[in-house]
Length: 120
Image (tube, rainbow, N blue to C red; front, side, top):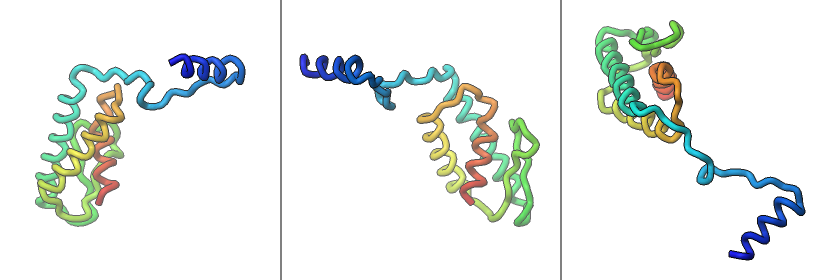
């Protein structure tokens, strides 16, 4: 233990370097209490909307999705997707968002739409 303190002292004071934090030592960002609930609800609405709209869509059509902030946030329909495929993409997105949380929950739908468009 004394060796560790001596090394830290040398690095910080003698060499003048500051120690950088890594992911395990950084403070975790505080997520709102209902973060996962809102994320689950919004992504479920997007999947439901896609399932309904793709029934009558033709390749090249765009879907307008509820909860979107921007008018540019539309899903480009390239092919029919099964519920299982959309659910799998939804689970992947939720897992990613758990590791990289946002405080602005109004962007969830837009981010999920971009994620779906990036995975054709």
